[in-house]
Image (tube, rainbow, N blue to C red):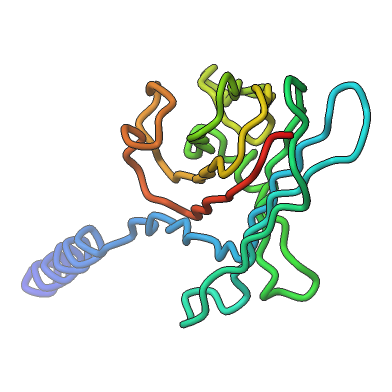
Length: 185
């Protein structure tokens, strides 16, 4: 009888030990991707030369400022189809982060801010799975002739959705941001 009692105590103890073990699967952490390059390509709807807005920061969070370029002026009163591309050029070959932004569309949004432009507007041309704007594809209607305009492009991770489309009320975490100075001729 004593032996059965000891065996019973042993099994109960083993049962308690195994039932208290931590078998929870850890939650996967979606680490932020490194984005060194943001390119917004604007192609005139009626044909013509595309204008490329590009910010390239090849040292990542290093001491050097990004190199920001605009390949030319926009044409006044012209509609442009725009496509934003995000890359990590520290990888060889460069990693296209845009694919991840599109796959995780509910967790991202590209915001655009225009200043100094007379009559220019930007319209989202794509949506996330919940029907909210994504912003990888846009339509930019260039207004009248003006110089020294600015376009700010910001990719946000986990912004408030739905939102009013402004960068100031986006919340979330900024994955990449660039401001471009351009003219409309």
